[in-house]
Amino acid sequence: MSPRTRRRLSVAAIALTVLVVVFVAGVALFVERPSTTVAADTVTTASKPATPTASFVPTIAPVPPTGGYALDFTLPTFGKSGCMVCHGDPQLTIVRGDQSHNYWIDQKIVDASAHAKIQCTGCHIDFAYTSPHKDAADWRRVAKESCKNCHPDQFRDYSLGSHSEKVGPGHTPDPKAANKPLCGDCHGSHAMPKLKNNPAGKAAEHALSQQMCGSPGCHADYWANYNDYYHGAAYKRGATDAPACWGCHETHATRNHKDSLAYTNDSQLASTCGRCHEDVGEGYLTYTKLIHSKQQTLDGNPVYSTVKSARTGMSGLGETIGSLFGGRGGK
View 1 (tube, helix red, strand yellow):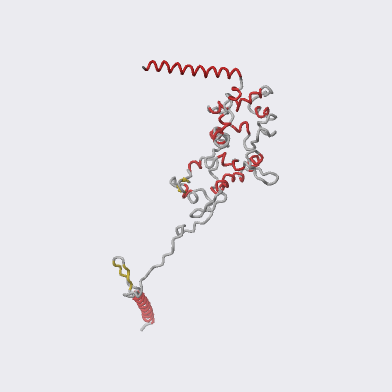
View 2 (cartoon, rainbow, N blue to C red):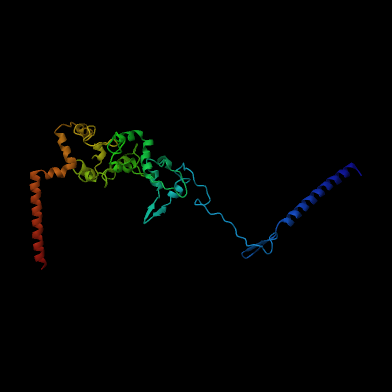
């Protein structure tokens, strides 16, 4: 037998041996694998006794509130990967007692606001997501005060003004502190207009005096009597050059008019009015009493009071005569 023939036989023998080993291994796996028979709602296997000695009761772990997912983490983004997964749903409503609260946030409103690029946790700085949410009694307050982190100058002025929650020498809070506004109470939340290089945004903010200052619980009485011809009445008719509340009372450093630094203090009025009017003199300043006290001033004028009384009397007489003729004509 030639060497070449012996080599060929050796290779063939090795190949045959490998095939035999693979075949035997496959048969072993097939024999040890339990055969499964499914009939209706029962499942039996070859390794399972035909008649079990005890009934089988599966142990099922309780489903956690998170639905099996680890959801306790801080959300760093505003987009769909974060808060808007839930708050982008208009139907996101929570019922508490006999009241329902909707927590939907309109993405379009936020995108058009001054804070379009600010993350949710940029304002909700104490917020870490848990499912279900843990109650946070002060979450509104935290969000309303978080503005100071980006607007320190404005917060400093606010802290010096009459709207701040002042603390006395004995570290006693102002008794009126509970009624003092926070940043968000005046400026709102998600729909703050853009002001920088945006005339439309500035015009929108200029028109918010009633919402910012004259709402019930704040200065509704001052809003009601802001009716003088050149300022209040013109402003309420939409005049863009008529002053909003902060045009005379300052913005963040608003002070009581008795404070010598207040823009509306007698010592500051010439400078305050001079921002809009030229050649403001002492006689010119007498008009300022009409800005919030027009009706009161008119009622104190004897000529006006007499004419008003006469008009009221004539109006009453006219109504009486009208009713008489109307009654007679109706018969």
